[in-house]
Image (cartoon, rainbow, N blue to C red; front, side, top):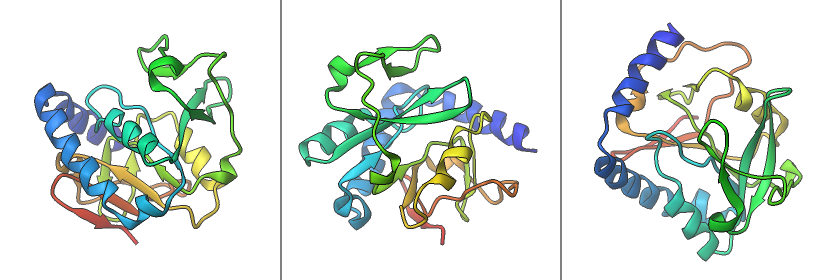
Length: 189
């Protein structure tokens, strides 16, 4: 069932035109940055958008203007873990990886202790109102999120089309606390 949902929503998301992705992303990011959760956070970890995800580039620029420490996940495929790296200058620090995703290279990788994180933006393909999510299936975030202080807010930015009634959950799944879409803010718990 997870794989079926993943394919269905990915197809819908991939059908969004680039101008619609930009418009929806702008609205979602505006809603998010108006939240007290964002405003009170100093060290924010967020994903770098890829393939029609809610665009985070403008959010990164805003975070830098707001003097927040921008932290990005860097995947370590050897053990399916995430390294948290500080992003100082997106134009100079990021390069396309072999999968086409933007990542720092070894010269611009600036690992930081995950214990400094005040807020995490968690990516995903499918979400339900209880905060459960389906990602791409590699489990990077499922392994990473339980290592954080349980008080760190977990927020996802998503299009309304990514919200379903129920996501099948497994014991290791960690739900997000809030989902921000172009239409609403879903408080998950």
